[in-house]
Image (cartoon, rainbow, N blue to C red; front, side):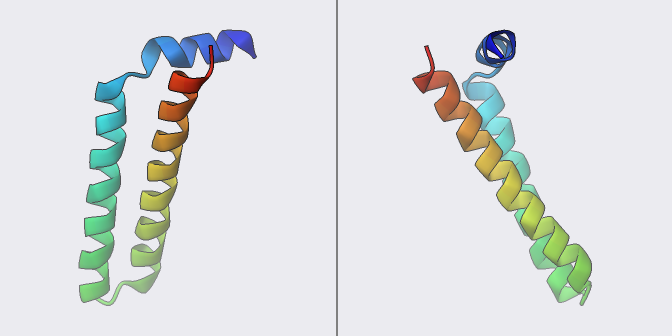
Length: 68
């Protein structure tokens, strides 16, 4: 477990966090586009993926700042 945490702390920085945020925004914008095209399953999947990506990004960011 310690090896995994150290790897995440070494690899995850502000640039990676920004990439998580940007990908989450693009997924959310895709869900809005899918709703306009009446592709409801794709819109729902894209919105859920956007939320999951955002949550994972915040968890990893706070984990790297809080854990020693």
